[in-house]
Length: 96
Length: 127
Length: 130
Image 1 (cartoon, chains in turn purple, blue, cyan):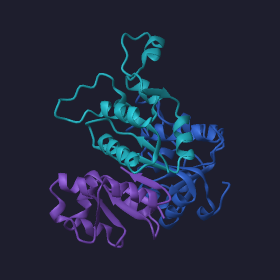
Image 2 (image 1 turned 30 degrees about the vertical axis):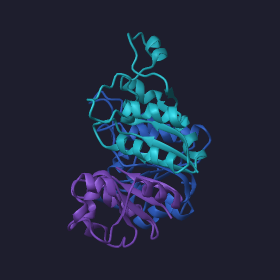
Image 3 (image 1 turned 60 degrees about the vertical axis):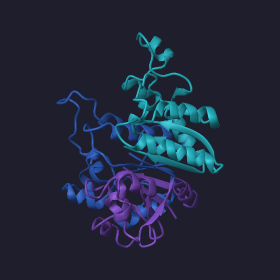
Image 4 (image 1 turned 45 degrees about the horizontal axis):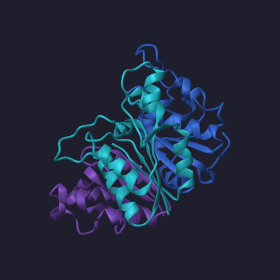
């Protein structure tokens, strides 16, 4: 089981598609930095099919004022949670 | 090509190249990392994804721009025993390319094979 | 576990460097061994000795230096990427006939082979890109 980390918003970059293409059925996706925009509104629909496997970095959501808009299906983790996710996965692949 | 099935492709290092030549240093720096690993005796797989497939355009050259470009570096791959070159099938189609027409021998891989690749290499680096 | 970080973003221009530093501190706080931070691509700018951000902003160069001091983390900067971007230590400055230098200890200019070695001997490598 791998962890993929995406730091760009699906609103501004297509790299999220490459991350999704490279994800296996058990892999997890963590949204960090501008990538947390993917956790809100209709943007989160781009990640349909990742139920329970989609995470967002809490500090990045809060700093951007996006926390109230975060979809309930997205699991919010702080930086310690980020480290935990990297422990649990065999390896981490970053998409930027 | 040494391997027929992407499922059988495993190795020490998978380098995913997502950028084409000239526009940025990503392609050069990604290739340099792959070459260094190979020079140290590691088994390296290169995957060209998205715009990265244009890295293998046969007619590319440094001349018109005066920038070094990457064709000399790409020509070194074989010398360093990097012979597992994979290209994203969907990206090839998007750019109107075919695996047979590329600068180096590369195998097209479909989306579902990509996830297997990341899992079967000890280290994955994206550029 | 043994961790490694690959950083390819310059300080300030993108969030990569800040995210990487926060992650590095969290890794150490969880009791893992951070075996090294490797700076490549624009990440080499994190070694800029003369960086002088405003007082009320994070000082990333100092942050990395403190991380090295507090946890004994090696800070390895790809020499080829650094030279191209004007990041030279005293030895390279002398070698290239340049006045002044822009990189000093604890940052160490090193070969790209160190990245591969670091990545393969650690249990986890996490990349932060711009």
